[in-house]
Amino acid sequence: MQIIFHTGAHCTDDDLLLKCLLRNKEEFSARGIAVPGPGKYRSLLKDAFAAMDRAEPASDARDVLIDAILDDEVADRLIMSNEHFFGSQRFAIEGNILYPLAGQRLGQLRALFPFDQIEVFMAIRNPAGFLPLVLAKAAPKRVREVLEATDPRTLRWSQTLSRIRDAVPDIPLTVWCNEDTPLIWGQILREIAGIEHGQTIAGGFDILYEIMSREGIRRLRGYLGQHPDMTEMQRRRVIAAFLDKYAIEEAVEDELDLPGWTHELVEEMSELYDEDAFRIQRIPGVQMIAP
Image 1 (cartoon, helix red, strand yellow):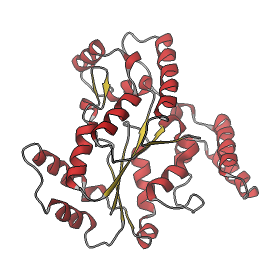
Image 2: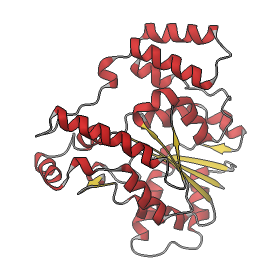
Image 3: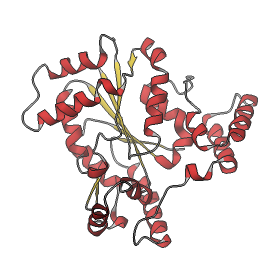
Image 4: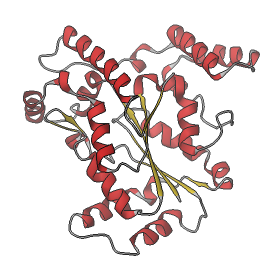
Protein backbone atom coordinates (compact mmCIF):
# COMPACT_ATOMS: atom_id res chain seq x y z
CA MET A 1 0.00 0.00 0.00
CA GLN A 2 1.07 3.57 -0.65
CA ILE A 3 0.88 5.59 2.56
CA ILE A 4 0.96 9.33 2.02
CA PHE A 5 1.60 11.58 4.97
CA HIS A 6 1.11 15.32 4.75
CA THR A 7 2.45 17.64 7.39
CA GLY A 8 3.42 21.30 7.40
CA ALA A 9 5.39 24.08 8.97
CA HIS A 10 2.36 25.13 11.00
CA CYS A 11 1.00 26.80 7.89
CA THR A 12 -2.44 28.34 7.80
CA ASP A 13 -3.17 26.28 4.67
CA ASP A 14 -2.77 22.87 6.32
CA ASP A 15 -6.37 22.55 7.48
CA LEU A 16 -7.65 23.88 4.16
CA LEU A 17 -5.62 21.31 2.25
CA LEU A 18 -7.14 18.49 4.30
CA LYS A 19 -10.64 19.89 3.77
CA CYS A 20 -10.04 19.97 0.01
CA LEU A 21 -8.86 16.38 0.00
CA LEU A 22 -11.94 15.36 1.99
CA ARG A 23 -14.16 17.20 -0.52
CA ASN A 24 -12.86 14.75 -3.13
CA LYS A 25 -13.22 11.73 -0.86
CA GLU A 26 -15.94 9.96 -2.86
CA GLU A 27 -14.26 10.39 -6.25
CA PHE A 28 -10.88 9.43 -4.80
CA SER A 29 -12.37 6.32 -3.21
CA ALA A 30 -13.54 5.14 -6.64
CA ARG A 31 -9.88 5.35 -7.70
CA GLY A 32 -8.65 3.34 -4.72
CA ILE A 33 -7.49 6.45 -2.82
CA ALA A 34 -8.61 6.66 0.82
CA VAL A 35 -8.84 9.99 2.62
CA PRO A 36 -10.12 9.15 6.12
CA GLY A 37 -11.09 11.91 8.51
CA PRO A 38 -8.30 12.84 10.95
CA GLY A 39 -10.29 11.44 13.85
CA LYS A 40 -9.67 8.00 12.36
CA TYR A 41 -5.90 8.07 12.77
CA ARG A 42 -4.38 10.99 14.69
CA SER A 43 -5.05 9.63 18.16
CA LEU A 44 -4.24 6.08 17.03
CA LEU A 45 -0.85 7.10 15.70
CA LYS A 46 -0.14 9.27 18.74
CA ASP A 47 -0.81 6.30 21.04
CA ALA A 48 1.25 4.00 18.82
CA PHE A 49 4.23 6.36 18.90
CA ALA A 50 3.97 6.67 22.68
CA ALA A 51 3.96 2.88 23.00
CA MET A 52 7.01 2.64 20.75
CA ASP A 53 8.97 4.77 23.20
CA ARG A 54 8.79 1.72 25.48
CA ALA A 55 8.86 -1.24 23.11
CA GLU A 56 8.92 -2.34 19.47
CA PRO A 57 5.54 -2.49 17.74
CA ALA A 58 3.70 -5.82 17.83
CA SER A 59 3.89 -7.94 14.70
CA ASP A 60 0.23 -7.26 13.91
CA ALA A 61 0.32 -3.55 14.75
CA ARG A 62 0.32 -2.49 11.11
CA ASP A 63 -2.73 -4.56 10.16
CA VAL A 64 -4.65 -3.47 13.25
CA LEU A 65 -3.96 0.20 12.48
CA ILE A 66 -4.86 -0.10 8.79
CA ASP A 67 -8.13 -1.90 9.61
CA ALA A 68 -9.05 0.76 12.16
CA ILE A 69 -8.16 3.67 9.85
CA LEU A 70 -9.79 2.34 6.68
CA ASP A 71 -12.86 0.96 8.46
CA ASP A 72 -13.63 -1.63 5.74
CA GLU A 73 -12.73 0.72 2.87
CA VAL A 74 -10.53 -0.91 0.22
CA ALA A 75 -7.66 1.28 -0.99
CA ASP A 76 -4.26 1.17 -2.62
CA ARG A 77 -3.31 4.68 -1.48
CA LEU A 78 -3.96 6.02 2.01
CA ILE A 79 -3.66 9.75 2.68
CA MET A 80 -3.21 11.09 6.20
CA SER A 81 -2.53 14.65 7.34
CA ASN A 82 -1.37 16.19 10.59
CA GLU A 83 0.37 19.56 10.83
CA HIS A 84 1.76 18.57 14.24
CA PHE A 85 3.23 15.26 13.08
CA PHE A 86 6.81 16.46 13.59
CA GLY A 87 5.92 18.23 16.83
CA SER A 88 3.60 20.83 18.27
CA GLN A 89 4.63 24.47 18.52
CA ARG A 90 6.47 23.58 21.72
CA PHE A 91 8.69 21.10 19.87
CA ALA A 92 8.98 22.88 16.52
CA ILE A 93 12.34 24.42 17.33
CA GLU A 94 15.25 23.59 19.61
CA GLY A 95 18.27 25.82 19.55
CA ASN A 96 19.00 26.32 15.87
CA ILE A 97 17.19 23.16 14.73
CA LEU A 98 13.78 23.12 13.06
CA TYR A 99 11.65 20.09 14.02
CA PRO A 100 14.35 18.13 15.86
CA LEU A 101 11.95 15.16 16.26
CA ALA A 102 11.20 14.82 12.52
CA GLY A 103 13.64 11.98 11.86
CA GLN A 104 12.49 10.07 14.94
CA ARG A 105 8.82 10.44 14.01
CA LEU A 106 9.37 9.15 10.48
CA GLY A 107 11.51 6.31 11.82
CA GLN A 108 8.56 5.29 13.98
CA LEU A 109 6.21 5.58 11.00
CA ARG A 110 8.50 3.31 9.00
CA ALA A 111 8.60 0.80 11.87
CA LEU A 112 4.78 0.77 12.02
CA PHE A 113 4.44 0.28 8.26
CA PRO A 114 7.60 -1.65 7.38
CA PHE A 115 6.56 -2.96 3.96
CA ASP A 116 4.42 -0.10 2.68
CA GLN A 117 5.51 2.65 0.28
CA ILE A 118 5.60 5.76 2.44
CA GLU A 119 5.83 9.26 0.98
CA VAL A 120 5.87 12.53 2.91
CA PHE A 121 4.57 15.88 1.66
CA MET A 122 5.30 19.02 3.61
CA ALA A 123 5.36 22.78 3.33
CA ILE A 124 8.19 24.92 4.55
CA ARG A 125 8.06 28.64 5.25
CA ASN A 126 10.37 31.57 5.75
CA PRO A 127 11.82 31.28 9.28
CA ALA A 128 11.12 35.01 9.63
CA GLY A 129 7.43 34.07 9.55
CA PHE A 130 7.73 30.58 11.02
CA LEU A 131 9.38 31.57 14.30
CA PRO A 132 6.81 34.25 15.27
CA LEU A 133 4.04 31.79 14.37
CA VAL A 134 5.23 28.96 16.60
CA LEU A 135 5.84 31.42 19.45
CA ALA A 136 2.54 33.28 19.04
CA LYS A 137 0.83 31.45 21.90
CA ALA A 138 3.93 30.75 23.99
CA ALA A 139 4.40 32.20 27.44
CA PRO A 140 6.78 35.19 27.65
CA LYS A 141 9.33 33.02 29.45
CA ARG A 142 9.30 30.48 26.60
CA VAL A 143 9.70 33.26 24.02
CA ARG A 144 12.74 34.61 25.88
CA GLU A 145 14.28 31.14 26.18
CA VAL A 146 13.92 30.42 22.45
CA LEU A 147 15.23 33.81 21.36
CA GLU A 148 18.22 33.51 23.68
CA ALA A 149 19.04 29.98 22.43
CA THR A 150 18.42 30.61 18.73
CA ASP A 151 20.30 32.57 16.11
CA PRO A 152 17.49 33.04 13.56
CA ARG A 153 20.03 33.53 10.77
CA THR A 154 21.14 29.90 11.12
CA LEU A 155 17.72 28.26 10.73
CA ARG A 156 17.81 26.04 7.65
CA TRP A 157 15.09 23.76 6.29
CA SER A 158 17.73 22.02 4.19
CA GLN A 159 19.35 20.78 7.39
CA THR A 160 16.05 19.40 8.68
CA LEU A 161 15.34 17.65 5.38
CA SER A 162 18.87 16.22 5.24
CA ARG A 163 18.45 14.81 8.75
CA ILE A 164 15.18 13.20 7.67
CA ARG A 165 16.85 11.65 4.64
CA ASP A 166 19.64 10.29 6.83
CA ALA A 167 17.11 8.79 9.26
CA VAL A 168 14.79 7.24 6.65
CA PRO A 169 16.59 7.26 3.28
CA ASP A 170 13.89 5.13 1.62
CA ILE A 171 11.08 7.65 2.26
CA PRO A 172 10.85 10.26 -0.52
CA LEU A 173 9.95 13.83 0.43
CA THR A 174 7.98 16.36 -1.59
CA VAL A 175 8.18 19.93 -0.32
CA TRP A 176 7.09 23.40 -1.37
CA CYS A 177 7.45 26.91 -0.03
CA ASN A 178 4.32 28.08 1.77
CA GLU A 179 4.75 31.46 0.08
CA ASP A 180 4.21 29.78 -3.32
CA THR A 181 1.16 27.75 -2.29
CA PRO A 182 -1.51 29.90 -4.01
CA LEU A 183 0.22 29.44 -7.37
CA ILE A 184 0.71 25.67 -7.09
CA TRP A 185 -2.34 24.70 -5.02
CA GLY A 186 -3.85 22.44 -7.67
CA GLN A 187 -0.58 20.64 -8.28
CA ILE A 188 -0.07 20.06 -4.56
CA LEU A 189 -3.51 18.45 -4.27
CA ARG A 190 -2.95 16.26 -7.34
CA GLU A 191 0.55 15.18 -6.27
CA ILE A 192 -0.71 14.14 -2.84
CA ALA A 193 -3.62 12.26 -4.40
CA GLY A 194 -1.37 10.72 -7.05
CA ILE A 195 -3.62 11.70 -9.96
CA GLU A 196 -2.87 13.16 -13.38
CA HIS A 197 -1.92 16.84 -13.58
CA GLY A 198 -4.81 17.72 -15.88
CA GLN A 199 -7.41 15.97 -13.74
CA THR A 200 -10.19 18.19 -12.40
CA ILE A 201 -10.23 18.36 -8.61
CA ALA A 202 -12.73 19.97 -6.27
CA GLY A 203 -11.25 22.80 -4.22
CA GLY A 204 -8.74 23.98 -6.79
CA PHE A 205 -9.64 27.62 -6.04
CA ASP A 206 -10.27 27.29 -2.30
CA ILE A 207 -7.03 28.90 -1.22
CA LEU A 208 -7.65 31.87 -3.51
CA TYR A 209 -11.02 32.42 -1.84
CA GLU A 210 -9.08 32.84 1.40
CA ILE A 211 -6.69 35.51 0.14
CA MET A 212 -8.32 37.24 -2.85
CA SER A 213 -11.24 39.64 -3.02
CA ARG A 214 -14.52 38.32 -4.41
CA GLU A 215 -14.21 40.72 -7.34
CA GLY A 216 -10.76 39.33 -8.10
CA ILE A 217 -12.03 35.73 -7.95
CA ARG A 218 -14.91 36.58 -10.27
CA ARG A 219 -12.62 38.23 -12.82
CA LEU A 220 -10.03 35.45 -12.57
CA ARG A 221 -12.60 32.72 -13.18
CA GLY A 222 -13.93 34.69 -16.13
CA TYR A 223 -10.48 35.11 -17.63
CA LEU A 224 -9.56 31.46 -17.21
CA GLY A 225 -12.89 30.45 -18.70
CA GLN A 226 -12.13 32.51 -21.78
CA HIS A 227 -8.70 30.90 -22.15
CA PRO A 228 -9.24 27.17 -21.48
CA ASP A 229 -6.18 26.05 -23.45
CA MET A 230 -3.56 27.75 -21.28
CA THR A 231 -0.67 25.64 -20.02
CA GLU A 232 -0.15 25.18 -16.30
CA MET A 233 2.68 27.72 -16.31
CA GLN A 234 0.50 30.25 -18.10
CA ARG A 235 -2.28 29.72 -15.56
CA ARG A 236 0.18 30.36 -12.73
CA ARG A 237 1.35 33.59 -14.28
CA VAL A 238 -2.26 34.71 -14.64
CA ILE A 239 -3.02 33.82 -11.01
CA ALA A 240 0.09 35.71 -9.88
CA ALA A 241 -1.04 38.79 -11.83
CA PHE A 242 -4.52 38.70 -10.32
CA LEU A 243 -3.10 38.18 -6.82
CA ASP A 244 -0.87 41.19 -7.31
CA LYS A 245 -3.97 43.28 -7.97
CA TYR A 246 -6.69 41.67 -5.85
CA ALA A 247 -4.97 40.00 -2.87
CA ILE A 248 -6.36 40.82 0.57
CA GLU A 249 -3.35 42.41 2.22
CA GLU A 250 -3.91 41.17 5.77
CA ALA A 251 -4.49 37.62 4.48
CA VAL A 252 -1.14 37.32 2.70
CA GLU A 253 1.18 39.11 5.13
CA ASP A 254 2.93 37.32 7.98
CA GLU A 255 3.25 38.78 11.46
CA LEU A 256 7.01 39.23 11.83
CA ASP A 257 7.18 40.96 15.19
CA LEU A 258 9.43 39.48 17.87
CA PRO A 259 11.41 41.28 20.61
CA GLY A 260 14.66 42.66 19.24
CA TRP A 261 13.89 41.93 15.60
CA THR A 262 14.59 44.60 13.03
CA HIS A 263 13.59 45.11 9.41
CA GLU A 264 17.20 44.45 8.43
CA LEU A 265 17.19 41.09 10.24
CA VAL A 266 13.97 40.02 8.53
CA GLU A 267 15.40 40.98 5.14
CA GLU A 268 18.57 39.00 5.83
CA MET A 269 16.58 35.95 6.96
CA SER A 270 14.42 36.14 3.84
CA GLU A 271 17.47 36.20 1.57
CA LEU A 272 18.96 33.22 3.42
CA TYR A 273 15.65 31.38 3.06
CA ASP A 274 15.67 31.92 -0.70
CA GLU A 275 19.20 30.52 -0.87
CA ASP A 276 18.14 27.55 1.26
CA ALA A 277 15.25 26.78 -1.11
CA PHE A 278 17.76 26.38 -3.95
CA ARG A 279 19.89 24.16 -1.72
CA ILE A 280 16.90 21.92 -0.98
CA GLN A 281 16.41 21.21 -4.67
CA ARG A 282 19.79 19.48 -4.71
CA ILE A 283 19.07 17.08 -1.81
CA PRO A 284 18.75 13.51 -3.18
CA GLY A 285 15.30 12.05 -2.58
CA VAL A 286 13.65 15.46 -2.19
CA GLN A 287 11.30 16.87 -4.83
CA MET A 288 10.39 20.54 -4.64
CA ILE A 289 7.19 21.83 -6.19
CA ALA A 290 7.89 25.32 -7.46
CA PRO A 291 5.87 27.80 -9.55
